Image 1: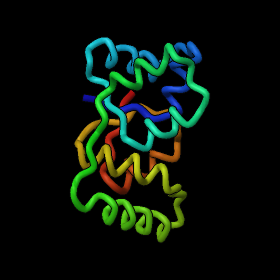
Image 2: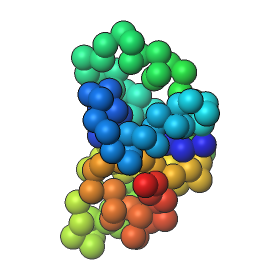
Image 3: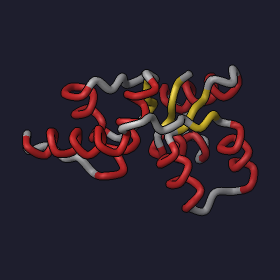
Image 4: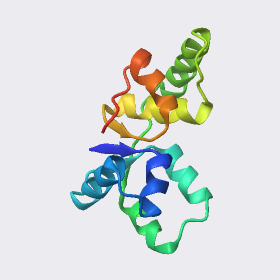
Length: 124
């Protein structure tokens, strides 16, 4: 399994050709694409064409593990104490991937802090 972030999914839907969008295509074909619940929310809250909703609907939704909210909050606090950017949505996405032990496909450079300091695995 591999998870995708909204930034890469939006590029994939737009037809952008890059390593991250190729990874999404490959994961979708192999039925290995998963989504943190926050990513599903972000994508469906935007204007997503019906053709793309199938991909979202067929992706495995990562489950929240016991203690998820506490770990996500403490992770955000830890990053903020270091003076690093830690948006709430990014914290929720990162913690979900860390808990599920899956790599995240993303274009959002803010996730590098989660990889460096919190154990998030980044793909591509």
